[in-house]
Image 1 (cartoon, rainbow, N blue to C red):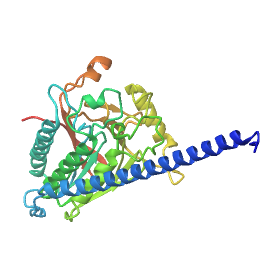
Image 2 (cartoon, one colour):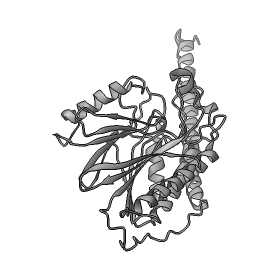
Image 3 (tube, rainbow, N blue to C red):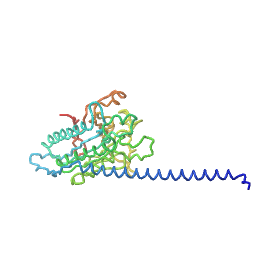
Image 4 (cartoon, one colour):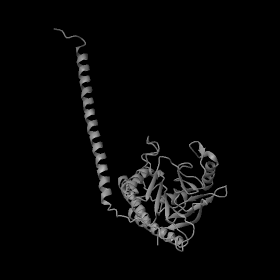
Length: 350
């Protein structure tokens, strides 16, 4: 019996179809295994974070009780501590995770020395803590970054959150109320600038959220963590903004005159909340790793720039020809008159 002419063609087609089905089955199996691995990794990450939190050994805090006024009859003021650009896990010739911890602890001690000096004249029972972003070093800002850290992103997440919790516990025992206002920075970005990741899905924000959860037992500590990239806060009649600093300029850099011009535009009405211009006095900013201040054209407000506790930043040295001594910023605010009464550059050393 003679075979049809198209018999070989049909046979080859069936074989090709069967090979395609087999390839699809293989692909589905591989995809299923990949999903299982991802699920297992996520579960392991959750378990690891939980175990890390439990291992911190957080001490119990005795709530602060303001002393009787006595000779401290002056009008009460509020402390304002700007902590920013810790760059947790950044590794340079003079900076790493352990140095970060030592310097943050020294900043807190030095800040309290200044607070106690103020308390000799008037009550300072409350504090507002501004977290300015770039608290972690991240992994996705430049190609060589993974070679300039001493801990992975997960370890940064846990170690910096634990240090933030430690800081809150330190302050909780020394102030009647601690209000934390959290801003996220460019180093917390996940993926490249072109990656399809919402800007607010930021590792800084995640670190803040973990620190908040770790301090859930602190009744006098409150947190403000939002998706906005400009944070607002009020201390009585004092109204100000907290930004990281990369919101203005190209590739995260802008000259002081450009920054002042941009903030002036915000003051003139371009910065609005619920369709209405938001009136504020000052702006607090980090990002540039140096301590500075520029007056705003209205004659009342200022743009306050706060330094970093990192040292030997080669990018700043080689590309911007600048460097700075590790420091943070401490202000005292009159809540009735709505203005800063005293300001200090707090050094990260004895």
